Length: 119
Image 1 (cartoon, rainbow, N blue to C red):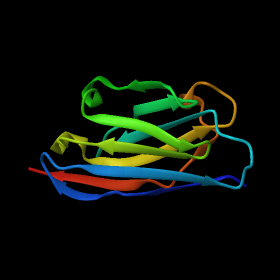
Image 2 (image 1 turned 120 degrees about the vertical axis):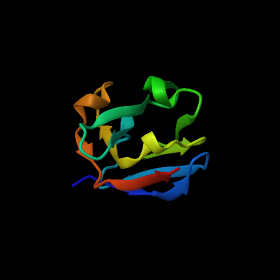
Image 3 (image 1 turned 135 degrees about the vertical axis):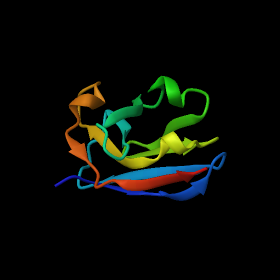
Image 4 (image 1 turned 90 degrees about the horizontal axis):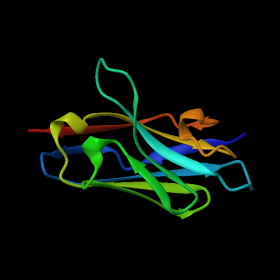
């Protein structure tokens, strides 16, 4: 059974930085696409950033220039978040696909990690 475990959430002030990490266990087959979704309080979950293999990245407009998604191996993904804003607050979920290029069709989800940015 594949499990995704997130770490790195927390509370910071506006302008601060956090790095989220997500590590998969339970599969020897590398994960094709990985990504981070965010769910602000009372809102729907949205895709913040995704990466296919090691190079093809995509970001929501609000994250461009501030967030960087990268992988260190076939089972781990990180999200470096700089210049954080209060609107970045939410629960961040890691997601991954086994074979699909589209992380919106995730096969696996993490439990979520809270990010709170105070003004």
